[in-house]
Image (cartoon, rainbow, N blue to C red):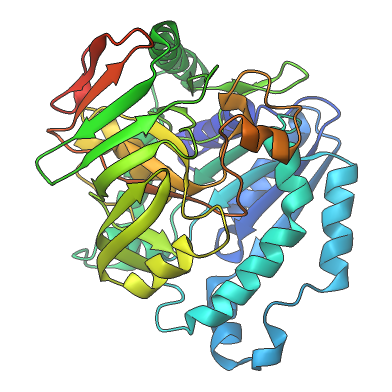
Length: 410
């Protein structure tokens, strides 16, 4: 076993999810990467985890079901799944998602079938997502290669093995894993760098930010009163720090739900519903998407925007410099955890309550009144570019350059 793999798993479990003695852990993983799940279990139990439960997935089986099952079987949640979900909620299972999804696993599948399932399962998982949003749980999204994903990212390789090897090398680099240094120390320093940026942004207490670039983006995003910028790591109510995404290069906050106006152009494809939306733009008025277009899979973009009442509004705004290692790799990952950390991005859907002071313990209605969008969806899409300029306006009307030509201006 490559020593870097061991370091990577230790970093994901020890820094990412940061599992604590006596805690329970749910690991979501593909059957293709069962060996990774076993390594995660070993590290988690060595750190004192009480129980580690594996939730298996299989792209091929999922595709067969969507293509061949009867229409009546979609949009229904089996009772055993509801019971398991309630067990996870009652016993506070922290969440590690080990992604290796094929970006086009469901290409050609009837999107109505996928939408029915998404709506039903999102509603079922709402109590658990509420725990995460309320900072009661640690969670982390990480990734490992699959053949299908690796071949999509590296299509010109001679063999599956070569593609997977190239993917591993890229993941290690992006996640600051090497044979010489301590990944824990690497990550501590990186988190400190990101948190230094959030401190500056929080001191400015901007009223709004304006995004512009040569692609055509011209978007003004207002910020809620008492908004908070976060980055690197976040903290649970019990004081445990964790890194929600590995890798991460972003600092983020929540937009004012009804305070987004202008047009924004995506700069990378968006993987959604098992397929890829590409070359798209969105126009906002008073926070809501009122016009949009996509060259590829506009029907899926429509599904996303119309998923529920909140999915046509923004719930996240994140800043990432063009010089981030993931951006400079030149790799198009077709994976949100990676692509969003190569580019400034927004998310349609749910806002994070941690991004507004005092919002975590409020009801959804109270959070909405504080400017935080509510939705069962949360879909990140990338908008950053090498010529992105961002100008912030303070509460007293002062203009401050935040990004200049794709880079931090301070």
